[in-house]
Image (tube, rainbow, N blue to C red; front, side, top):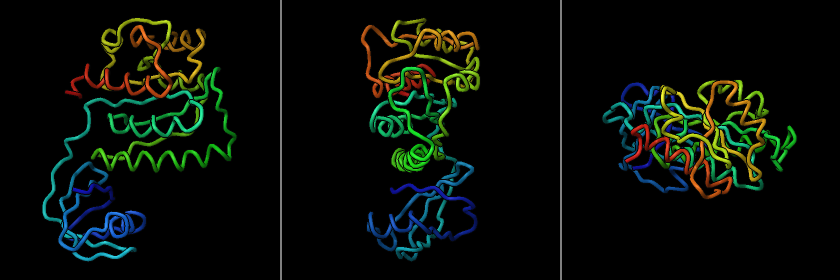
Length: 239
C-alpha cells in the first residue's frame, strides 16, 4: 500500500494536495477506492480509501488508525563527511531506509567536495526530497531531515559523548563503543580520504569513541550503510 506523510489528520476525511496529490494521480495512477496509508506528525498511521482524485487534490476517507511500529528504538544521527560527486544521494537514501533519524553533512579536512553556499542550498533541497522519498518507500514513521553543512569541529562538539567515529586505522569494537550510549547515537563516517588523526582525537576528547569496521577498507558510500546496519543489529533493530 502506498505510504504518505501529512500533518493534522483529523476526522473521517482528509485532503492531500501538492506534490503528493500529483504523485498519486499522475505517477502512481491510483484509482477511486484504492487504499493508501498516511502517517501523521505523531507517528500515527491512518489507513485510508481514495474518495476523489485529481492532480491538485486527493480526498480520502480514514478507515482506521494505529501507532506506527516501523521506527527503531534509538535515535541515530549520521554525520557524513561530504563524498565526491553524487555519492551523498545514495548515502542519504539508504541511511533513511536503514533507520537513521537525521543526516548531517560534514566538511572534514580531507573532503574533496567543497560546495559554495548557493550550491549547498540546492543540494540540501534535493537531499531532503530524497530523504522524503526514501521514508515513504521504507514506511518510516516520520521524514528524517538532512541538516545544513557543519564544520567537523562544530559537528564533534554537537555530537559530544554520543559520537562513534569509524576510522580506517581501527579502534574498539562497535559493540563496546555502544555500551552506555543510551538511545542517542551519533555516527561519523569519513569521505574518500578518511579522517585525520586530529579529527579522531577531537571526537574522543569530547567523550566519543573510535571504532573499526573490519580488516577491509570500505568506500565512503559503503561505510555508512555497513555501520548503520551493524548498529541497528546490535541494538535489536535489525533481524
